Length: 260
Image (cartoon, rainbow, N blue to C red; front, side, top):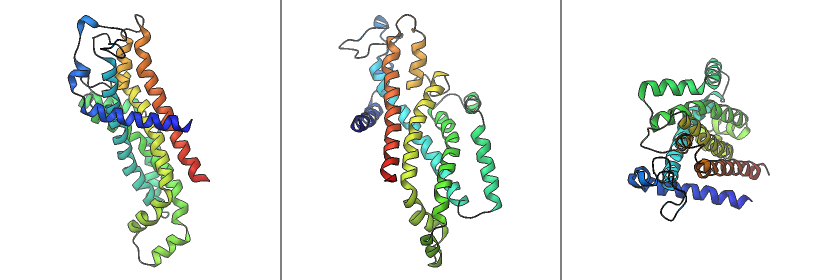
């Protein structure tokens, strides 16, 4: 079973690579004579209500979803992780200020922030990345904060201080290597959550602009032909479920391997 989800993850990243190189006419050109066409040699998954090829739109959509997921995780990991490593070092008044700000950010309505950003700047892949990345910051902060506290208090870190290493040197030499498996597992599960989050934003029209497909925006397109032919929701829906499930299972595998 564990090999299956590894293959699905590999297939997803291959799809991302192909999607990055895919010319726009493959996923944006409209064939008005073949609208809502069924599966055929020319259209492996059929066409949508505008005659656009569903298969190629899924491939390009995987690239956009992957970029949003990876970029939002990098943003939140750098900000949330760095703050967590600093605040877990020792008790200061700044710890309470930062932790309070993180708690406020955690409970703030995510869709509201996305609506505000889209209203100001318009829908784009950058706005989707920022919207999702902002609300991953508290997750990484809490996970890394709790994981690194005990490492900061360990004997080998005390020895490193006595040897003259700065706090930043200790972070990179001692703290991060001892919690990297926890960070990797959290990044993996957050990637799965990013796919679902983007799907929600895309379905509400708050993700990328209409010229670029994502799996969420494709689900929104399906709504226009749902009662005519609900089949068109199946390929992208199955892709989302299998991909998110595979990343979640891989995250569990990382945790289990490092807990032995």
